[in-house]
Image (cartoon, rainbow, N blue to C red; front, side):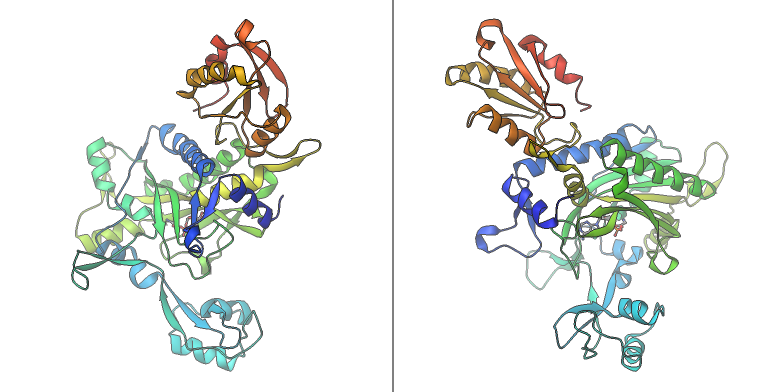
Length: 450
Ligand code: GAP
């Protein structure tokens, strides 16, 4: 696998990602998606939607607002719970989570301790800064991970609201709407893709951890007695989806959360971790959220969110199994996984054809073929994302398409104007075949799933 530095340079040089607000010196850990990055991101999203919504008759899509009633976050436990006890090392100026240092260095779980108790423990037990070894810490401060903003145009007036830190809550508050309007029966899933925002303390590793990111989440509502079965089912489905889209099976592993690291809502979580160049880290979290969220919203909103099974007449608060994936993190994993060096060819992005940013590149060999080549482009561009490449010799042009992962090149060769046929070059095999222009669309329709 390439190093992280090579991956970042690759993405910047080839139009996948650019530093955010670059002409103003950038904004720390903000990244903009370039022409190829947005195509890749859209394709990953579509591949996910196809598997987790379209192919499951019991699943539905949703697009909830980012801005929600602040009580949503009180009920969900994010106000109050979604904050970290932080302290600074006064010598090397690095910031640390006090509870993590206690746990790592003293093997004691400080869950539920007051800040005073943690500070005393740190002093009495010689807890050290992991960066410089100093014990000279500031006092512990609470760090709120949710972004706050103001609703209302007059500064200082109006109400304080939050940017959502997860898309899941938009789904929970619409559970009843979806069941009623779609006449849905359980088990049933609601999926959505959207932005989430977190004031992360340690953003970094390129797009791995940023403050603004996108999640693809499914909340699968089921009878509590079937929750374990569905938990296993969705774990397997997630892993199979990754393998189907070409993730190397040696790069991904399941890791069960220890009881001390479980989120406040979870009775069990398994992460699929990916072996990124900087180390093995969480890619996809699959959690059994139990009935925590629906119960919490019932309590605060006073709305009845119990489900009445029309067949068994049973009434219950559903359990929820949640596979939650970061779209940006997934994109990074796909690039790390697919960018390989092949002898005599150089770097090739061996990405699944469905995910490739550009599906087909049209290459006229001679200037006088350009109009003909434009006609070929128009013929297929309404079905497939195409590009047009005229500069450089053909070898260089193939190399450039290999580098960005284009699965097929259509070359307008020396005989094309005579016989109305073109050469198709396959990225994976480099094999070339000639086919009639009239067969192009059918030929490519077989090559892509969407
Ligand atoms: N609704 C559950 C939830 O939000 P999470 O483990 O905090 O759980 C789920 O996040 C997924 O979202 C992670 O597995 C990761 O892929 C992605 N994610 C979380 N924080 C992120 C961040 N700061 N930057 C990029 N992706 C992030």
